[in-house]
Image 1 (cartoon, one colour):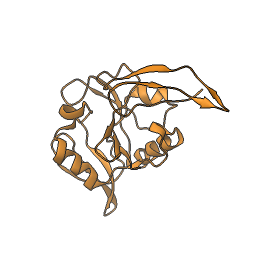
Image 2: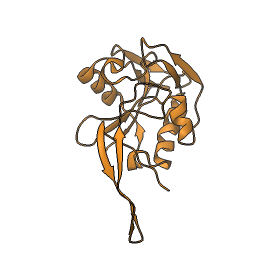
Image 3: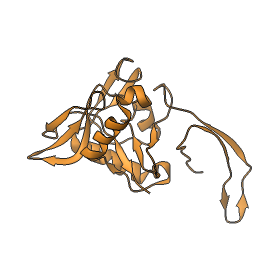
Amino acid sequence: TGFMSGVNVGQTTITATKDGVTSNTVSVEISACTLTSTFCIDLFDTGNGKLFTNSPSTLFLSSIGGSVNNGVTQEIGTSGPAGDFLWFTWENASRLCAAYNNRNLAGRTNWRLATKNELEGLFNTYGNMFNARGWPVRLNYWSSMTVGPGFFNVSLKNGGGGPSLGEEELYASCVSVP
């Protein structure tokens, strides 16, 4: 058994080889995450293989074995795709990225919480991430940047942001660089 995750939308074929034995070729269709009733997450390649994730839906995180989170918020289709998404304290947002490493998400083990500059760069380049990629954006996203006794968060809806103590429940975006 194994796990495969797509990076770009489209169709491809895959084969697997182990101990000199090659599997049959299988055709796979990779589609954009538009409904949270499916087990998917957006792995957004912003160039040179740098991947960002949106905050996960409850079904996606459950499908990979889960992670510590702080509950569910429901998007209704105006600031994110209609469905249930997870929110996190800062500490649990960091644990989410560690869970992605443990699960080898997209074949990678170097997932970390996005920096303030990375999140601001996403917004400055692509604008509202719900409109650009279908991400939930009703809540701000945690960054790894410390500010006084807390951490900086960024809105991927309007580009705003500010400091929080870390106990606030917000979204999380993890980043991986090859």
